[in-house]
Image 1 (cartoon, rainbow, N blue to C red):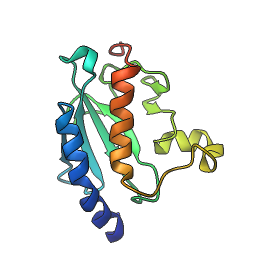
Image 2 (image 1 turned 60 degrees about the horizontal axis):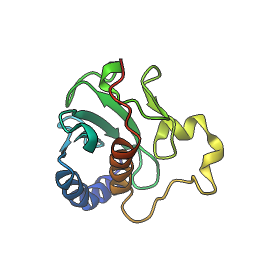
Image 3 (image 1 turned 45 degrees about the vertical axis):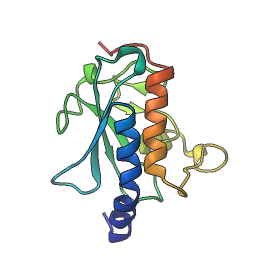
Length: 145
């Protein structure tokens, strides 16, 4: 990760921490990869459920991050049970096909412009966290099998 991305992430990180804590979650930066963060989150409707989200940036704030679910902070990214059931979240493919992930933009190049274009202004990291929490709170259908 380039130095500009590293500095921008450090600047935007506190707002993400505040948001996650307010919603019963937490944020941990990966010790071995400064571009990778681990978010612990859960849906309001199932407060006993915890999800571990791995968010990895390539260029921040200019590009969408890779977003995957793991079985623990620092855990495996190849466990379908680690994923929530939400439209667009594809546990079998280990990706999210929505316009806030690098994987979504790879699958839908048409999203590069127009209303689905990546919002590189403001605090995109916070926007990703808010989008994930919104999906967990309003579109949650349980844990994947």
